[in-house]
Length: 183
Image (cartoon, rainbow, N blue to C red; front, side, top):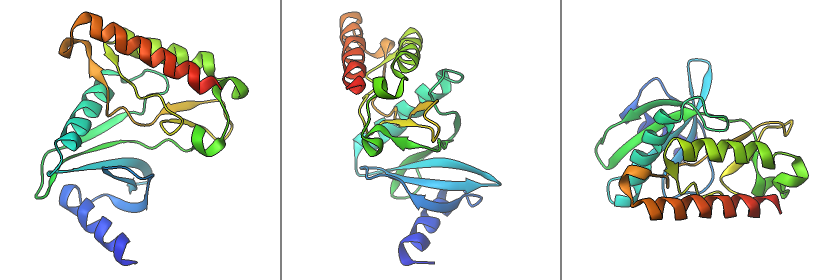
């Protein structure tokens, strides 16, 4: 096992000894790993105690995933972990096998998923969440290009935490970002 893999496994063990490191996922201010538990794959996000952004990211995403269970395109929530040592907390969620729009270099219209993603975004808005950070790095497509996943919901804001006009502005921004993903 390489030194990085050993250190990653050591960090995972702080939270849950049943998790096995598979690989690091995309660059982020958080540690983001693909992990294996039993025979299934998951995403494990870990925040540093030094950055208040990390705690907010982990907390907001966990809240959103819990409340958005069953919404198409939203990964299933598995578990939250509180602070441990130098880490402010962590999150375990379903792993989605696929590639981001950035990796594919194609827009949603070209693939034919624009309408399906828009329906999911509107369902998320109806459940009270906005500020989805819909970028080419945060939307992944399945290998057959028939399904999608919003892979990072760490910036979401619930309507109870902002004024109504701000929430409406955030929803509008999400829809503009979604149109930009169409190319």
